[in-house]
Length: 240
Ligand code: C5P
Image: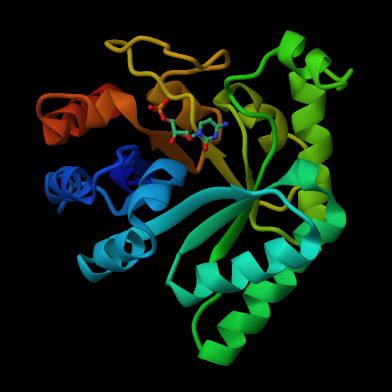
């Protein structure tokens, strides 16, 4: 039986390291993974990664790199330097960019003698629907766009993708992807929380049933009066 707590990534979406530490404190012994995104990283920098690693957490550095291959390659090497256990790039940055990120991450990890971080490709943001894709010139449905970007990421050798849980079963049932291909799904909403800006959401229980490996959850946990209780409530909902 898989422990659902090991699948939960708590998103520390705050500008304050002090606030992030308070949340992390209430996660000790409950969850293994924390996510540091552009808000906390822009505010506090790499010290946030180092701090939570020292506290024993695994850290997903969610900076969604999307730039020319050379720049992304250099940023990927720095992600390894600062100890990220997982980081991501936008698949829509293209195959050369993804290749550079992967090669650079592997090279840097070899040099340092550490395990290479898990490298994930962001497909279509969960805040986007058909209309939003149309606005940026994409004529595919969100599902097809996720599938095409996921195929490209897999071909290049990335470890998995970020997509909405709505696309999880499609990826899992598609023979093109190896069993270990990781599915990271934000847009998770327990029954007792509102949807916010996500347009493609699912409950945590259903997302796991659909084949999600990691559930990224921010506001339902970090805005709770007691974040630890919110995690426990969510885990009860998953196992109940
Ligand atoms: O608060 P909430 O649970 O909606 O937080 C979702 C987190 O997942 C945010 O940190 C957001 O940046 C991230 N996210 C993502 N990819 C998406 C959608 C959200 O990494 N497609």
